Length: 237
Image (spheres, rainbow, N blue to C red):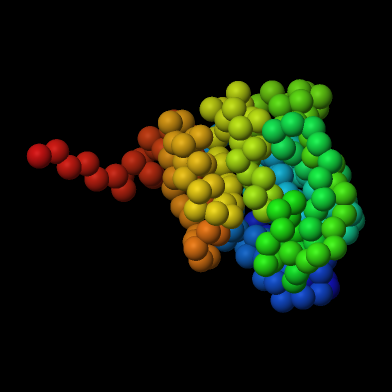
């Protein structure tokens, strides 16, 4: 399915799978609703899009942060093919046919029941019985091998692998200015806050239903910006 959409002020052509879920997810991302641009983030050089699927977020980030290199990682064959096509005209997007984890491993990726957006290494009601083998890399090792010593904007949507990836990136997390992360269980939501709560502030989110939603955190230095700080209420009795 080919879409014509406005993305960060530019008209773009985009290809997604021919189903309502794929179209809806792509449309929301390209409109900037899923991963809002944080204007207070400065000197954004590197965006890491982990779980890039068909490339809507990679395209959005490439236009929202035109001075940055966007690394888009997607281990599944079919969405990776669309990711390549959708970002082929974007010189600041680099695509990688791998996923990240806390350590190197191969895994069975269960195909999504309705669309590739719900494919996961964990079986659930949103996956099918059939699967493909994908390669997951140690996040720390992959970053080092690709000479990435700083990630300014980090987006994670990996259908349940977010915690191992964050744990594998512990040394880099403090320098991340903007973190967009999807959670797929309430336990993971709480674990995400424990991992980044000391260095980042939750500034926006969308809860789809119990156990699933998208969260956006910004670094403490950005959260002190008047744009965010004016909303804080402190009560001392």
